Image 1 (cartoon, helix red, strand yellow):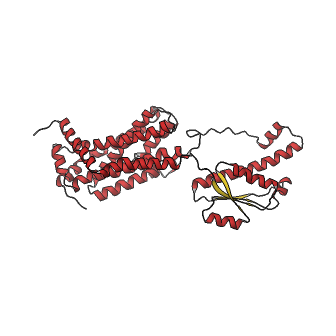
Image 2: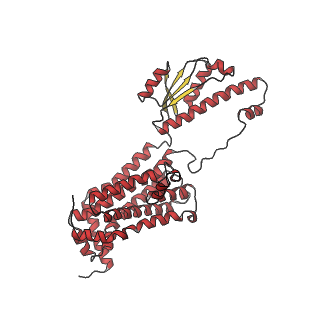
Length: 391
């Protein structure tokens, strides 16, 4: 019986909807897992930046000046002085056990040498094995040391009769007016979750798409799918993935609403454009998955390729290490990962508010990825016809 194209699409869509409902694993992977990951990461970084990270102090001077320095250090939002060690070895043992992230060491005769302008040395140690705590504590401890020096200089200059303006000009000859762009709160949740969540979702999309395509061969249903599609592999694959694409897109749109509306993350381009970008991420990721399965229509091999490519995309997207600083070969490869142009669109549009005129190349890259399945359709049709499952 000859069916129209629309009827063929409808029959396959209904077939796939029944498959989704009958196999809870699909719904768990596409709905519950992303929801759990979003709740986990967003609640993990709900404060924006780490606060009250434990540090230890070693005060060998034990004077009013040294005690004021420790008190001021404890007042910093990122620090919490939880341990006053009697010597450096005791503090070092606490750091080795993971009880503290940093040590602030004040030597003997600190106040005496400071007032005599003998330039005493203050030492601070941070555990950089934990990148964020180590860098934040290093910044605070360095700031504390500079402020201590400025406080002493201010007292000496005022004692010599210098005015407030003169003291300020001497201690800070150049005034700094700092304006962090894109993330003025220096919020790590904004920095990480805007790309970490889409990155993990990209992995789920690619692995799930390959698995679903491979199930047709494994369960012996691929020939039946081709019969419904009148042997048109393009119709078969497109219609088969429409329900999955719709559900995946709905989840990415929900993620955008949570990030940009509920949590108020910066989005200068408007949430509607970011929803379009998320949809492009979904279909480009699915297209790459179809390409891998069509290239090697053996489920375990294509799953390995999809997993490797999607995991590697997080490193090559550019959000942790700039692509421009990578080796030229890696810079070229980065353009073949859907997450890289998506990240560029997020930075250019959501953070910087740049127009489409300056970001169109990223749309071209993502649209090119959606065309990759065309090159493997003959091989995919052959695999579905022969219906040979290799475990």
